[in-house]
Amino acid sequence: MLRADMSGEKHEPQPWFVSGDVDGFFGLAIDNLIQFLLILALCVGVLGFPMDLVLGTILPGAALSILVGNVFYAYQSQKLSAQTGRTDVCALPYGINTVSLFAYVFLVMLPVKLAAMEGGESPEAAARIAWQVGLASGMVSGAIELIGSFIGDFIRRITPRAAMLSTLAGIAISFISIDFAVQTFESPLVALLPLAVILATYFGRAKMPGRIPGGAVALGLGTAAAWTLAALGSPEAPVASSALGEAVSAVGFYPPVPVLGDLIAGFSHPLFWAFLIPVMLPMGLFNVLGSLQNIESAEAAGDAYPALPSMAMNGGGSMVAALFGSCFPTTIYIGHPGWKGLGARSGYSILNGIFFTVVALAGLTSIIAALIPMQAGIAIVLWIGIVITAQAFQTTKQSHAPAVAFGLFPAIGAWGVLILGQTLGAAGMATGNMGLGAEVLAHPEAFAMAGLHLDGLVALSQGFMLTCMVWAAASAELIDQRFGRAAYWVLAGAGFSFFGFIHAGHLGPGGGEFEIGFGTGWRWAIGYLMCAAFFGAVALREKRAASTA
Image (cartoon, rainbow, N blue to C red):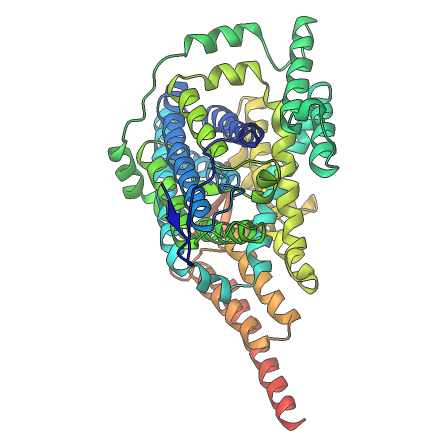
């Protein structure tokens, strides 16, 4: 269909498919495939979800959200091509949000499951409650993105970029990169060579033979190494022919089905409200700002997309996912200039949506997981974590680097609490005494004797995403000598802490537990008020000094 640009001249849009779409599809598909494998591994291995829930409900819902978004962004690129007369317009890359995936698994659904079990629920019932609350979390994330499409620019104006990116970097370096670095060196025969390929191609921009994407080469070499070890009978082999046979039996037809009842159950469960402010709202806000930044990146590469429909579709995709059983929000991906540089236009987006629809609806994810070990692909996710961390320093003002660094501490503290909780759980399983963790925690003096400041670690970790925003933002304002604005940020910290959204809590056998309520964090609130008073006094002094100069 012919369209007219602002001058009235009509243009024919670019072809729907070009040769560069093949390269673009392969790269984007590998990226999304890692997310699917992570969903399968984390939902089954960490959260204890039954396989039929993951294959029959969660993944089909995720695939539907990917399909809807990919088709929209492909159409959007064709529309922009027709409006401008250009034939090099690249669709916005889109898929499962990696940061939200880890955040909702480790910061929402796993704590919900552990809390439900402590409340007397069976592991199976607790897992279902965790999934239901996860659905509500995904719906909240989508709704925030939808609302943010109208107010996104205002949020960007009042919040220093250092505060937003520092929080993401903290999650990336602690909950993504460190964990996958550990797994990489745990399986050196399978995972180290793929890591070398990723670093050479993504960091060094080395070209692979036949223009094969580096991610595909890394997966291929890691998979070949794993099956070679299996053929040699090595106990280190992360694959087995028996697992492949079981995966084949899971192939079938899994159409996406609405799960409105479970979604409502998630919203109505008391544990949902415990995580709404400290986790869900900040994650939704980060998604909004991330989308805005990626839209700006696309414009810098020559493709100027309007923010409102782009972000609204992103939010709508997450809401579709939640309605059809997926707990994992979608996002506009980082790296639009990279896909554009590969020659991708509109077709790569459509191919990606179709591919994952087929994979999910046919139940092929388990076969892919059985064929391709996680160790072969974790280098890609490790790289994502590294890039997210690096970008927090690269895309903020150089003078704000200390603020970004300061904002990393709460996330690292939260990771430490998670590891401590896992260690206590492992000790209980090793001794056959599942109450061992509670017994150890009943003697806090033992932690002090070992040199661990347990109370401080827990306080730093509770609501760490909000804590990161408050202190990174305040630090950025102080660096710019805007002491009054820094005072406002720590006043917000006083409010968050007074009601227990940050700092107030304790360590349970399963990790940090919130103490949300009126005045539960009064000690920290008073500390924040004293900080705000000090910053305010400095602001007044500086103002008086400037007026007399």
